[in-house]
Length: 377
Image (cartoon, rainbow, N blue to C red):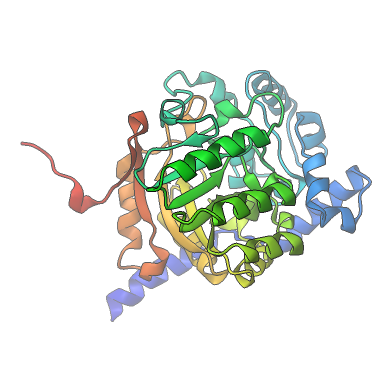
């Protein structure tokens, strides 16, 4: 019993120093008020997801009026901006530490000069362009596929696997391209699982989302529909009553989200998840293992505990893909295994995701665990 208490006390001591979205409420509220004042906006605006999308922060000088940035940081951000587009929702900015330049929210969303020094990454590490039977579809598995519906995001994550798609402006797949995707699914009766992704498909209009879900629900061999979205972490205001009514009409719908740090698990995120769950959605989380963000056993454990408290199931822990401009985020697989070892047996199985690596060449996800690793010699 003494050893069990020793294991527990070490985590409890570390947990005290790990911020969550609930513990930073006062700090976030102060930054929110600064943002509203800067944009001459109201609380009503703040609750409107379209306002956040319209007012995404995408230049360093504006950002410096909200959080502390040195002139050197502003210069470097502007330098990266010439190559890689960036934008951050006002809501997500409000979760940043106003002073910690290495904070997990900043690191995921503010451009780093290190993005320009990466010569090892590739634009399309999963070979999506080579596994696309029709323009809006990527298919790497026998019974499922993804529909890339848009390149829009509330916040363009610096570690994004599809940053090649971000371009210089927002766009969505045309109705014609989406119809081609639906036709392909109808023709291939082995497809039972369809993931609508992007970008972030929840930034499409309610009408387009309903059309897609309705079309897929009418295909007899499509058993489940998944929506890949980061809005629960970066723009929870998007989860409106009307959107939930649409989700409720076309079960089963699984929401696949991406929380990467406990700081993202806020009261607003909890409220959005609650609304989706009441609408019948099941919510799974796919965390990306990121150096300087969550590559700590204690941070990962707190994250998964916080997710379970808001009824989000930790599903995958992804090894970050070698995307051009992101090598500063990538950890070793050994480090990922150490985190998994620290989780297993030390917390409930519900809080232990599956650690996976995406095989190169579009070969899909490969589970990684110590029991599956052998060394010759």
